[in-house]
Image (cartoon, rainbow, N blue to C red; front, side):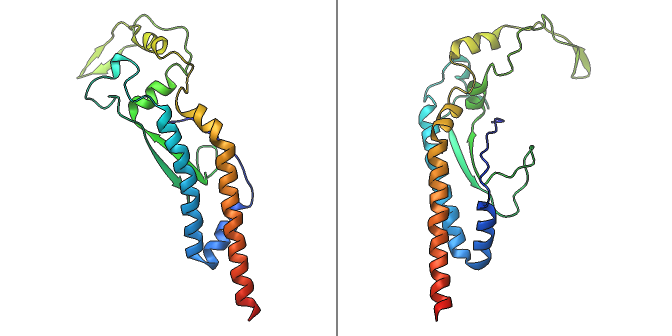
Length: 187
């Protein structure tokens, strides 16, 4: 899924880096807490994806066969790689499955004009061209709703709740760390 939506909350990454330096167990508790928030979103997205293939073209045994959606929640660590826009996501929920990705975003390109024949291309040592069919346009019509049919609407509805949950967890664990530091420093 190539769609990216981010919300910048300043100070969390720095806070987590400091917590990691002071108390690694607490740091991993916070990460687990944030992962649970992402898993909640993942389950909601999975519930939004149909169990049966939305069109006949996904009923086969190949790589693009319709299978139930799976999600993976990633909580980045201190040294996570930067994304295309230069930002590093703190919490990321990835939806896996070629068929789900295709059906979810079909028609996003919005190309209205299409060629009657393909450009010349190499294949098995020869050059080829073929007629362009309307299969893709027919699939888009059969899927109905506009692109991002399954993932983004659920993510957008859940985003405020996930943000609140993550911030609440960081604040709770930070105050727990502060209480530990006060007890240790008070002796």
